[in-house]
Amino acid sequence: MTDALDRLAPAARPLLHRVDTTLADVGAPADDPVWPLLRQVRALPSEAVAAVAGWRVGPMEVAADPLRALARGYTEALDGIPAHPPWEGEGAVAYGVQWSALRGHITGAGPASVVGRLRESAAYVEELVEWLQRSRRAVAMAVADVLASAEAVILLTAGAADAAAGAGPAGAGPAGGHPAAGVAAARVAAHVLGPVAVACEEGRRLHDDWHSRLGEVPLQPPRADTGASGAGSDAGSGTVRVGE
Image 1 (cartoon, helix red, strand yellow):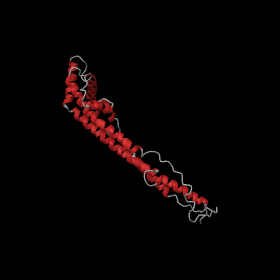
Image 2: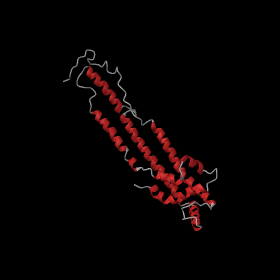
Image 3: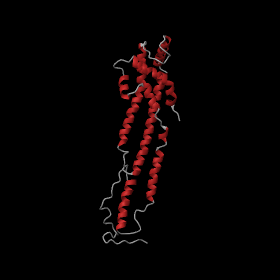
Image 4: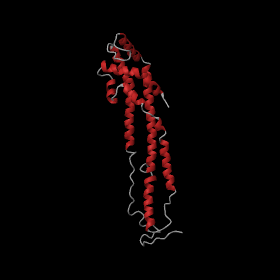
């Protein structure tokens, strides 16, 4: 399913390539806001927009439901396993100890269990989808702004003038003979790179927030003394009585 960025990115490609080449040849004032944005994003405008346009939301939108279904499946499967076996004695005690440890590992309270981690993973996927959608919308709005801007007219007009002067086809080369084009390119670049920088920062924060919550859940071995003095067992005598 396509969105606004899918439709706008191809239309903006010639303008953004002209912005790239103009910045490379003409530059911008040393204190222009475009420079910290370029350092933060580490990509030119055309590259940055193409990268965000390549972020696909579709596969992630359907990933949370199977994770939640798997969590329910674990819970339902364990509900069908008896907590106490139909026999008594040391074997019954050992069974209870192991069952309790396994049950806590799989369905224990909080995220530090298999089921809890699956639910956390589903929540992470949902938050990731929201970030992807929000970032794509913001970049699409910025691209739409620059396509209809006066700066775009300046850049494309400068390109046409270069072509008329024998510098090559319009849109193919830098607007080197037009100082105003450098200012226009810097403004377009800053407007486009702004939401890309925000998206990158939000993505890093999302990763950091969730990193420690999505790691492996190790199985804790049962305590050696758990159930050793269970009421009604014959652990001390070594006698085993099978229930009716």
